[in-house]
Image: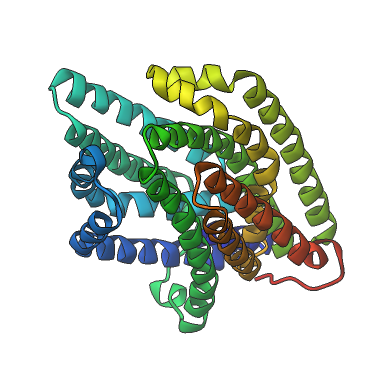
Length: 373
């Protein structure tokens, strides 16, 4: 995310040296983080084993997958860096085609390993690793064909201390924001494992509807990163304002459409995901939360994109700190029931949306200056 914002502003400022320097910084940090994750895989696994209640051998299966999947970390994080850079360069088609290719490769090898060779969760993990490295190699090939001749790479210039400090400051804010997101979503699963059967399955299925909605919003959030960053880098406040208005308008339209779809068809969608009647029956009393999710959360996704493009990471960080606190306060304050869990999650989305909107208002629509490279 930080990569796309910095790159988009460098693109708007027409600074080619900074454009390629950002890619070098991002890829070097991605590689370092990936190697650290691989080195720490056993402590990470032990921590998860301690935190998660092992119902029905959940941990056994999860760790079997994890110990294979972790070796794709360099490819996965490297693609995050490259994807952010392509989006910042106003090229969203390349990441789209790469994502399609990765999913097709993953599906093919899933079928080959699991159906063809009779493997289980290890086959799924190996398929993902193969897909991730095929995606990384293809992305690098496209970069060298499409962009390499336009840039002169200088490692010394790219990793200058003052530039790295700014890069780490912004990505540090985004990291803390992401830690909060992971804390909420992971705790959501932890809390569900401690509830009576089949609420874990019910919550997992309903959360899939949230994930589906988030994919729609992410497309507009990526557009916001790209366009808002470009106009911020070019000091074009007029087009920045217009972009934010149009992004939010599309967000409202999609949120209302998703509310209607979930209101009328959520039971049918869940029936596609599972054939367990007891799970489907238990989910009925919680489906009203699926109708609330789109309108509560659409602005949170879009403002993430807007603020990443404008490199206003501190606003994202501060907003999510408050939102995360509200989630835990509501869950524990209302008795740790499943409805309390969902109400806490909805409040978390609402606080993120409102606080980012309020805290960024002057920087977007007022006369207050915003950071630009």
